[in-house]
Length: 505
Image (cartoon, rainbow, N blue to C red):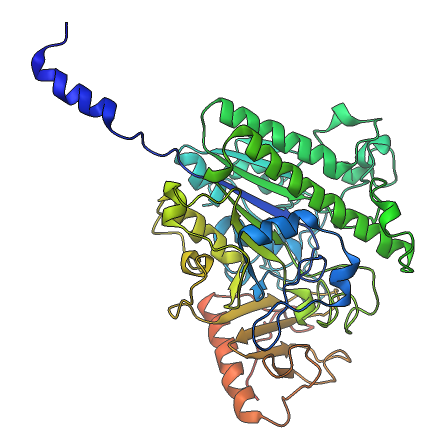
């Protein structure tokens, strides 16, 4: 018999509402997907209305349309111009100029470039580094990595996501491109690219399962296990798609056969549509498991497009934007970003704290380094004081509000070669964008400087460096101050000894 003194507290505890389960977080990361590689229009008119362009009518992404209709999409969201820097920025909340992994990481050799900085962070992440996965795991989340890793080279600690805070790793390794998307070729093991054979998917070998589908099945399975174990989860689903090789996904090839575009561009489009099917399948699975209203989804690309559609520095691959992956133009670093609860529910406790309006476009700038502080704020986790976080919490932006406290700037530092643009740093601040070329080339018109007003010239057709020297000087001073605040590394002179730093005009 329960003593009377304990009866009232017991009754009150039984009547009290149960505490909400911690929120789940999905980062759905697509490789080499730019802001125009989708049927969802991200670019807007002068009045802020979404504006469709021909590429929006070429690609088929109904699941992205579904997610965007439920949540908010950003039309000024930035990633680093190449992949490893972005991936490490997501994990650390730091700009690449600070974490110093400023180039894609070649798994087999240091690819700083002939005059690249010898002290750049080719080894990538390592055990003990503060990461988003590690912080969430330490707070009780099941941390699941599925897909592309590319956090460190062969033999380095960062080559294995299990060293970086993930409890589960499926298919993550040192390399950034699969040997093949076809299970009939053992995802590359039966090709000349066997050193890029995707690991951990042996049960699909010899079947007709496309790589994107295999990763989706694995992600769904690992999420199901976390839910069965009553564990909140962080799913980092990092697709190898839509990176080359441009293996056509047979499930969707017929949709582009009459497009008139070259075969590689058709294959690229099938990779986009297969990725989109993965997103839809995952959203459906979260609904089936009954956790959709408790799951926040971030969808984004890791750098600008690599679509095989025309010249890399012109308006073609990301039309109407100029340039593509690796270039200093907007097509190289503007990426799609959508945030939404997997199923909106205004009564959900977490959605009350982070309400996301439906079908809204956010025009304010944000970037990949903002993901870590946003997730930590939602999950009520404080990063250690000794870890410098460069990003800022996007909660106000996700709610569709303006946030005057946020600086409207993004630094992209690439002190390397060879790529589509070599040895450069750019800074966007408000409407203005400056590019500094450490060693002027034909791409830069033989000048150290390029200056664009992205409000008046969003497609970077008119270089104002010569006619507006006052703005150029102001922007260059800001660029140099940003680099110094991050303790950035620089390319070196031909003697290999002295660093070459940017100078104002």
